[in-house]
Length: 268
Image (tube, rainbow, N blue to C red):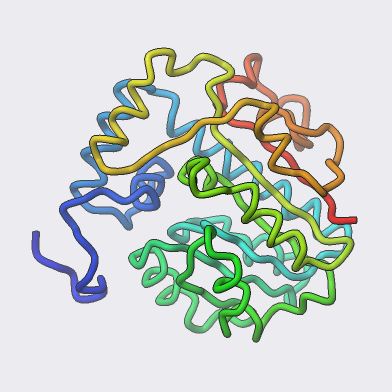
């Protein structure tokens, strides 16, 4: 395909991107044919996947409002992906126009889109960095110029850790971020799981692997272990719809069909 002018020349458009596939699930337009092909294959195996990604977005919105209610006014969104309706700054700045948000992703297309869309958006920044390199990420001028690490920060890792295998030591990375955060900060985390048996034969993971994307699911206990050093906010690690729903009607009969856990932890 012809290389769009706004896409960095180093981006291989013959390979799908996790961020762009996720954008397709959400109904976004910032994806390419190779991403749509993989997404449609996955949806044929797991038709609920678009609803599962929407559950992640709904969890993100609720958790940001929760942190705003507790006085948090700055956010570091790692693995932010491609901007869609209901981004962190839109949620936070609806409450406080001065709330600050730094978006971070390692996908250059997601970063390019984000920068284009947020050029004139005050109190936001977009950083190209990798969750697995906390030292470099935390030292990035885009992060240090906007966020005050002597004050509470909302650290968001929503639907990103399934793309960080154990060999890349996600727990160690989270620990490094935790040590950089001031007391009263929060970690917001969601994570795909096989606990509900939605992909018993691993066909979804196999499709992603064929697209050169490794997906890792983790059990409830493994997700809990990632929050070492944080005090978990009630109700702890639960399926996404069960975490502080806006109303009882928002919780479906089978919340496990969301296929992911959500949890918020407080840095003490």
